[in-house]
Image 1 (spheres, rainbow, N blue to C red):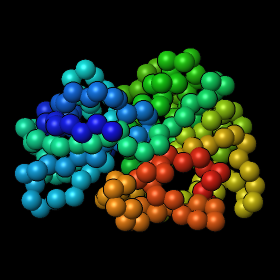
Image 2 (cartoon, helix red, strand yellow; image 1 turned 90 degrees about the horizontal axis):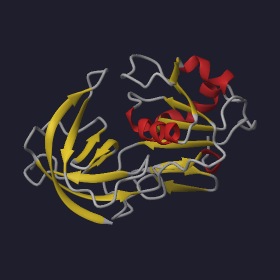
Image 3 (spheres, rainbow, N blue to C red; image 1 turned 135 degrees about the horizontal axis):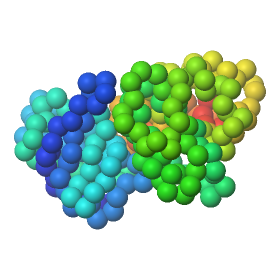
Image 4 (tube, one colour; image 1 turned 180 degrees about the vertical axis):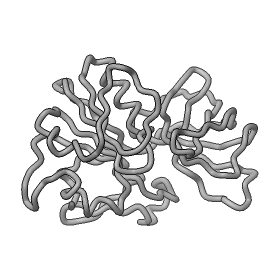
Length: 229
């Protein structure tokens, strides 16, 4: 795992008004879609804990971090980071039709997987409510209410899901209790990860079959069939 220094070079507001940032740094290993970097600002005495940053775009000069970032971070803020951390999305070679669904406040964390799938020639359908960022013309966009009828179309379903919404996921997908999804599914669990795997503090515990798993190191991306939902 690499440790590195970086600097906030630009603040960006997304289509919902949420704040992300370009981070200038020299990544020796880029995170895969769904992995994160753990960052903290040594100058920020009011927020000593770190924050997971999910890259949306990666360039030779750094990366664009998905919202949210610390409100105290401004252009010029120095950061210490470590990562990539955790398990990201896996895109099987057999995937030709990818469904992406954002059940939280942003689609940003799903966009790196969409870009990878597009490079592989996959058809991509994105399901989300509210305003969307500018997307490639090859992507199709639909409201979340259209997702249940599209599950039979997909070879893989990738979800971005706040942890409290896990209990309502069957209703969102239109899947009866005990019924199986018609396609494989992976889910990026959005939750606080204050220790990023160093202390196993349990704050990011996710209900799994017969046990709990930690989003910070066992995830944050999980095969949905391994979770209790």
